[in-house]
Length: 451
Image (cartoon, rainbow, N blue to C red; front, side, top):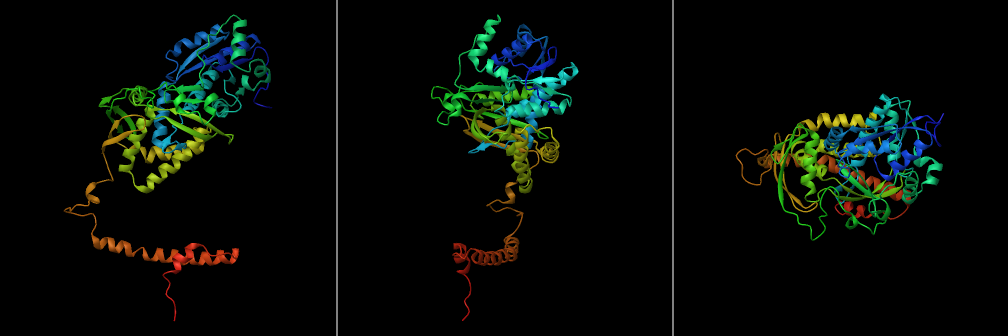
C-alpha cells in the first residue's frame, strides 16, 4: 500500500503540518480543517532571522483551524549540527572558492526529526509540509520523517491535485482566506523567495531563476549588502578560538552555549557581508537550479577551522578531509545526514580530525569575502618555521646530502613511468593507426641513437 496520500485522507484523520506561519501553510491549515481533518501544527524554532518571535506562530495556526499547535525549540540542535558540518567540511557546492554551507539541508534534518518525534508522541502519524514536487525538500522531509516514524504516512497539499487546482498561487490563497474570514495581509512581494534558519538564508525562484539577475537584487537578511557603495563597512579584527574542534570563543569572549556563539558569529560576519555565494547546483532529481545564499557565521567559523586544520594535519589527512567532506556534503544535500554511510563519514571526520583542532585564528574582516588572516596559533602544529626556513638555523631538519639522497630515490619511479608511457603510446598508435601524440616527441628527444 502506498505511503503517500494522493488525495485527502479520510475525515477525522490526524494530520501533522510543519507550520511556518506564511501564506501557504495558513491556507493549507484553513482548508484542511474545513475538509474535516484533525490538524495538528508544529513550528520549529530555528532562530530564523526572518521570524523574530516564533512563540507567536502557533496561535496563528489555532486561529486558522488547527486543533492543536506548538513550537519546538530546535535552536541548540541547529547550532550543534552546523558545527558538525564545519568539522567535517560537509560542503560540496563551491563556485570560485565560495562555498554553500548546506544551511537549508541541515535545517530540514533538524526540523523534520524534531517535528515527527513530537507528532509520534502526540499519536499523529500523517505528516505534511509546504514543499513542492520540483524541489529538494520534498525528499528530505520524506526520508527524515519515515526514519523517525516507520508508521508515518504522508499527505502534502502540494501533491494533491485538488489543492493545487484550487490554490495555484498567492492570489488564490489570499482570496480563499478572505472568504473564510481570515484575511491575510501580504507583505511586499519580493522578486524571489527566501527560506532561513540560524545557519543561513536561501534566496531562490522567481527572478533569480534567470542568470542575468544576480546578487544585486537580493536584500540580505543576515548582513549588509556589501556591494552597495553607500553601505559603510569598517575594518574589524576578530579572534576565533577552538577547543578539540569546537568553537568556544569569539573576540576573547567565551559563550555558554553553541547557539549563542553562532548568533554572535552571525552578527560579526554579517557586519561585513561575509559568506554570501551564488550557486548553480544539481537538485536531487538531477535538474539544475540556482540559489543565492547567506551564511555569515558559518563562513567565519569555517575559515578559522580550516586555517587551524592546515597547520595541524598532514597532507594525506587533509586530502581525506576534503574528499570525504565533499561526499558527505552531497549526502546531506540529498536528505541522508543520518543514514549509515553519512554516519560512517561523520564518525571518521569528527573522531580523527576534529579533536586535534585547538587554537585560535585572528582575521581582519573588510567587505564580503575580502579578509586577511592576521595570526594563527594552533595548540599543536605540524608547521614550524625552522623546519623549512630559508635562513641559517642551528639544527636543520635535513641537510643538502639528505635531499640528494631523496632525489636519487626518484630515479626508479621516473624511469618506470617513462618506459610505461612509451609502451602506452605504441599501443595507442597500433589501435588507432593514427599519429602518435606529441608526448612521444618529448620523450624520444632524449633517446640515444645507435650507430
